[in-house]
Image (cartoon, rainbow, N blue to C red; front, side):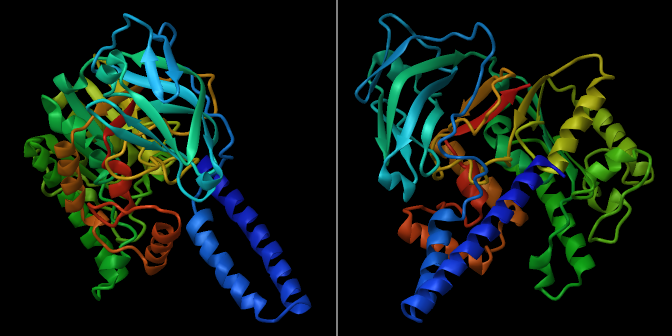
Length: 466
């Protein structure tokens, strides 16, 4: 069982215990006081749960985030005077550096009902970064894009439903401009490349998009059209395979540099465990990947037999890397992103790299998190603060790319073209969001109903140098 599954299992167990205790208390009150208290309290408790307690948060908001950065990372001296953040006299910052600011954030009593956020103002790039309700600990703001305002001494930090305090610590992490290099994005599923790195690959001098699976499962939306489970899964897989090859062209990526391997969703781990054994689709009644490869621009080794094996996946990946010779590979982060297909995608890349005569730079991304399903918190267009982390034993090197409003809109349109993000949310989820909008002040994304429009269309794309 993965760590994510263990955390979710513990969360559900604790919630069941809390529900049983609450039910017992409600029954006792209705017996001792008045019968009508039971339905009133049950409805009120359910509304409170949906509005304020439905987030999957697998740590205490009072926990300090714990990060360490590479040795000798520059730490320009910075001071917080009231709301004004000032550098020491004469300190200048590179415009494209990734700037990370550690400081303490403490939610007010209203910050238990509304999302606490820190507003950055005074420069040309005003920003908002949001934290957990009830936050009370060390957090890491992302000041990338604020170098000029910081250097000029005009940047202001203002807490809303929270207060910022303590002596802040700033890190200035410098890195190459990866947009000037040949970039390959590894996407376990169609839309992973767009969620994580549309801004990067749309600006790269040359970009390749390599999608490993067709993403054919969970096709209930298509079953509602009258199709069988098998036919719905096959249609969904064909649509997502098509998306993976065509949507990157919206960003200027040539069709001959988009490849779909056509392996089956949530089966990569089983393939890895028995590398020579074919592992068919869970729902599409298929053991041949070629249905989902028909629009590829060139022949892959796995096309010979279409067998969904780990060895074929490695051969396909090796052939594509040799053809593209990427200088930068963008892939799921091995520790942050818990999705099993994302973990296997990263492992496959590392295995293939062992046999190559060059070693590209690796940038990790996280489209999912172990500890907080809502991260990045806040709204579309906001900045992306560093995610929860509680092990400072291994230094990490964040790499941030800033996106203009126009680039964010292009990214949102690319996500909107992805068929998997188009179906409406279930009624229960829509009702929950309505209650949160009414009672907790949360906003939906103007770009689409799916949660990924809120999470991914941001001022920052955040990667990790591996």
